[in-house]
Amino acid sequence: MVKSMYAAITGLRSHQSKLDVISNNMANVNTWGYKSRSANFADAMYQNSIQGSGGTAANGYSGGMNTSQLGFGVNMASISTDFTTGSWSPTGNGLHCMINGPSFFIVGPFHATDAGQSGISNNIKGEGVSLSRVGIFNIDNNGYLVDDQGNYVYGYRCLTQSTTTTDNNGNTTTTEPTFVSPIQSDQNPRPLQPIRIPAATVANDGAQFGIDDQQSERLKIQSYTIGQDGTIVGIDENSKPWVIGKIAVAHVENPNGLEQDAGYLYGIGDNAGDVTPMEAGSEAVGKILSGYLEMANVDLAIEISEMIKAQRGYQANTKVITVTDEMLEQLVNMKR
Image (tube, rainbow, N blue to C red):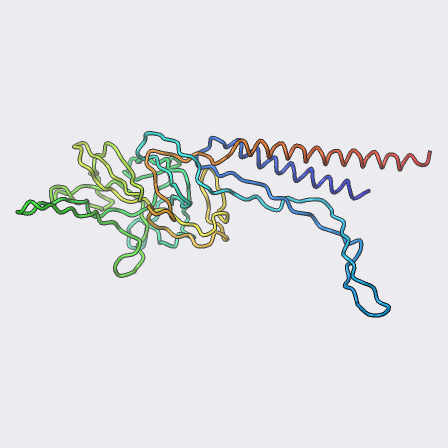
């Protein structure tokens, strides 16, 4: 059999795979947080019909010759993912949020440390957690912040509520809320923890939190907002604001090293590089937008044009097979 038919078959197979990628992009055009993918072609193996050689500038010797190679078609070398941020879609829900930047939310099952406190280390590889770009969050029956798949959302808990005091001269002083930050003054890493609505104490006019997970009397929050740095503020039944915690985000050194799991979750692959949890709010890490969800970054105009290219490439390869078949038919009929 002639080589052209085998080369055309590789073209058919590769263009079919490209169409599979395109169809997946178009099917997920309205999927929250979906990242478009593209198929990358590469030449298949080559056979040298003439071996190249260097020339020798001496009496009786020949000049250099280039290598002549015959290709055997094409293969789909890889599928790359475009992790640029998609468009914003307002939802009106204060617990819905998206990251306007390159980072990811950290979600997963409940974890407990040896000390009995819930949490995971800042080296989140191997901790069984996943990364996500979809912030469809809500509060479960135990007061924990979870996503719509039931995964706990990890971040930093607030130890104290911000308070405002006034001295005898009428000067007011506001203290900022204290969080369980990833690095404390002793430079020891602190674990990320599932964010939970805490119980209020009566000390300092109800201004402090009790953070014991066993307490059942939690704040009765009526509405929520999430700041650009991930700070969650809840308004209770008395219209009093409470700082509940801060959502952590993960910066991934090589996002294309992540592995897509079921739904919109990503597993941390071996080639993802360093995955560092940190606080949001900067341009490099990304800002959290409350009341919005991230739309798919699929460009339908590009996908349709790529579909046309795949169709024409597939059609051209089928033509090669047809012409090759006609040539073989003529060869077989030479005996007549």
